[in-house]
Each structure stands twice: as C-alpha cells, then as structure tokens.
Image (cartoon, rainbow, N blue to C red; front, side, top):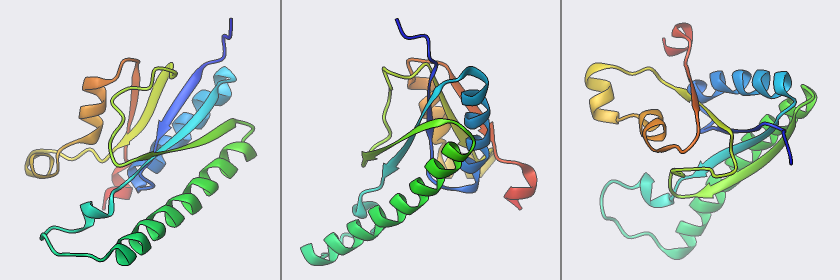
Length: 148
C-alpha cells in the first residue's frame, strides 16, 4: 500500500495559476507527496472566432507553437519543483478540461477571483472543476496586487 499523497496541480501558466503553484509545492513538501503538473493544451480552433479556413500547414504551425511554448513553461515549473525537493511529473492533456483525476488525492488550481459581469462573461474554470472533481480541490485566489 502506498501512502504517498498524490497531488495534481493544474496550470494554464497564468499569474492566477502561478499563485497556486507555491501552495502545491508547499503541500507536496509537507506531505512528502508526488506532484503531477497538468496543462491542458488548447486546440488551435479556440484561437479563431470566425469560421475562417486555415490550411493544414498553418494549423500544424500554430499547434506546434502552442505545444513548444507550453513545454517551455512546463519545464520551468518542473525544474522549480525539483529544485524545491519535490518529485514532479509533467502531463499534457489535449483540448479539454479533465473532469476527474482518479489517481489524485487532491487537485490544486488557481482562480482569478472574478466576480459580477466578468465572471458571467468569462465563466470560471475553477468552479467547473470544483463541481465535477472526484477528490478534494484546493483553489488559490490570485493575489490582489497581481490582478491590477
């Protein structure tokens, strides 16, 4: 039986998710847990509002650029975790927000802390994850000074 805490930290590499990373590291260090860093790779289609045509070559270039940038950001997070003495594993998920992580004991994610009209217009990924997760979720609100 493995008693190691399995912590999944979800990142979109924004300042809001960055604030949650320090909490995920703190939790992993305190428990001796294993940290999985998850990033959802957006589909290039999400970058286009109008139904314009994009050639396959252009599509592949956009997709390759998105992946390359995500891999750079992920490498930096993994390095920071390892430097802090935390075992970290990167994981990329294509195109959608995973509704559950059966292997996680806890999910850690940041939230922008939007309210009112901005929340209605933009929605809340964190709210959807909290509502659908099969394990506890720690949400970390982005500091006020970062939101300015």
